[in-house]
Length: 389
Image 1 (tube, rainbow, N blue to C red):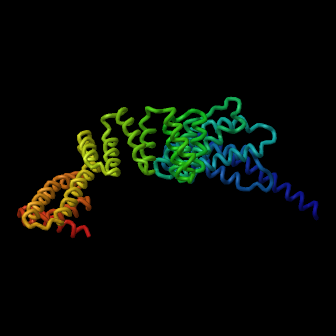
Image 2: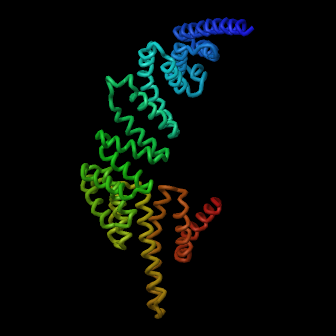
Image 3: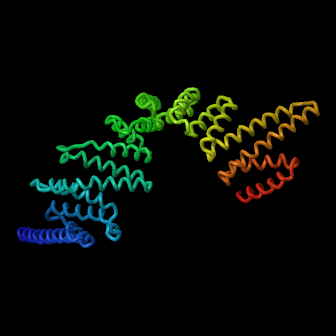
């Protein structure tokens, strides 16, 4: 009875293998004729039952079919599978695993060679779509393929992919991987100052501030005239509470790019921190001369003028003599009036900037008895603010 059962199983396996090979051949034929939907249907059926035999060629064909789905320009075919490139890769790896006679390496290598640009394109598309973890996985797959034994004879270091993997890992908040790929980029001398600046930020963000500063300075030593490197150094010292060092690097940046409004604006901010308000005003004014639409410089300049008027108002309030007090208050109100155009200009740039609207509302209210125009402006801006709440 056992012998009969064994014979029946063998007969069933022979039939299964025959059917499987028939489906694989059919899938290959459909693939050759460009009928990817039929090819997918045939290979999925042909590969689903491996109880009798694992057929390496079936996985090679499966890989080709799913890679073809990924590469197809036709939306109808692209919809046939989710993540077809990953399915194709896994199929090729299975074909190699089952390959006992060494027949699969050459055709698989040919397909893997095409998978490098396929995965690179997939990475770029996912990155542009904001799927940074997915893009990182695609870039890493490119590196995995390029590192396979089958490519060792003509091995190349894909520095662009390594650097892009670092940038993508940084975007995906996978800081350990980002640091790893940036360090590899530096090892291969790729990316210039940007690599050092990005690595410094990644290390600092991950808690390795000392190492981050080391790479920041190393990058500046190698690329002293690179504006990207300078901006990172400036930001580091501005945020780190060392304004003088930031100022030194800002001077260097201005020397390299004297028409860059953002450098003058940054220096204005530094002067504010050191309470050198006249110099800050000069820098904001300079920034606006370079870029009349520089919102931040316009807003900061308005705040400087407003704070100066407020300080004079406080001084005036301490005056005991009525005549002198009235003269001082009159001068203060004139300064308040002089502040108004700065914030009105801000609203020209950004009509719904709420802080400026609130400031103007208060100024119009202060001056409503000085000029009836300000009462009209007060009512108008009050209505607008009320409508925003």
